Length: 133
Image (tube, rainbow, N blue to C red):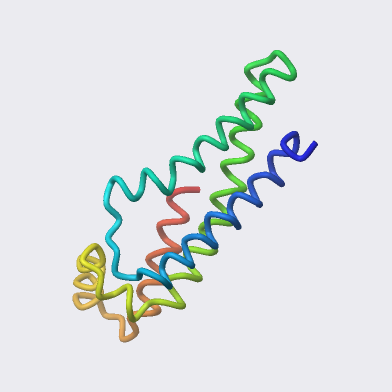
């Protein structure tokens, strides 16, 4: 069964949520990331991880199996999702840079030695990914 393969489920979730993020950026690029919006977006993702972990633990009767499955699904999801977030930034950079929650990033760019906002933002996102991993 597919749910018994957490890496595949994670890749699917990453594609699903990453694609939804791309579509939302295309439809409503200036929407801020309010706490409610973030909860509505990430809540189902976290519930899916919990479901995979619960099923693995229930199936084997071992908590360790659940932890391992939950970690695997989360890692696969966030790896895929993060690549699609980077794609969103590349595709919609001009519009996203006008968002209120991006003003600190734009201000840091202006204070930097970078000539290209795109290069600065891309490297900033990659640095954040390294910290998360």
